[in-house]
Image (cartoon, rainbow, N blue to C red; front, side, top):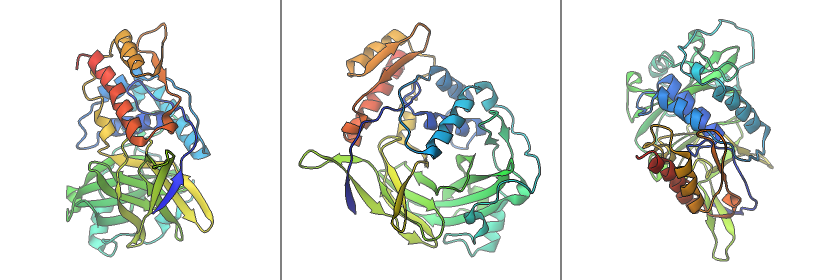
Length: 353
């Protein structure tokens, strides 16, 4: 375990439901694809889009900038998010596969050829095209299991990769430990993946959960769930290295309290860089807005947010309340989570939920 000081101030872009732009896109993908086990609906996805608000943003990596651009295209076409999945054009040309696709499968079930064959044949939901907002299917004959194992927390996870739109996409399936392929469901809607950065997935339903990182050979990883305050008042992070288990980086870690609390870094020799996309399932912050149905009253929301000490702006239109904070990176992750949940409660209360 290593400790790291946490400097800086950050203002992030969110929607009116309190999630950042990347998280909105992820939730829209899950809703549009009809992930089994989700209690949300396409109507809620569109409501989230209607309620979105702008806050100043500082993104520190080109990879995140690409995600934000894709998100903007998605949010601009909410009607197409729930369009029927369409077949992807068959083509052997396009982006070469990431290394993880061409290497042997990883995980404790990697040697079970029968299991891998059945898992590779599992049906996929459509993959959301950020350029058009349409859902399109992968090339079925290209599906290949890159990871299959029983992981901490009593889960069985399978990660499948396939060619999509002359690019590549991944799908993460989950079930109880020992589950047959037919008992696995999509834990997260399938999404495009360039392979330029590691693929990271985590179950956040409990205080500790499994974190899987699929990276190139020779890469290690370390994870911090959030910021804490040291006895001398400094904000610090403790990072735990992820062990290599059956060829993949896999560990049981403390789960983050908010969508932006956790930090994952990949390490290759002397190089250390942040992995910005960690995909969470059963994240606690996803439930904070469950009581919101109809758009909440702007005036009520604004008054409530102001009472929390947030800077609030209410524009001339409906559902355009914007709020910002200048100290998000100057307080602990627990304090951030408490404020985020309180801000969510403002929307729930304004809706009468």
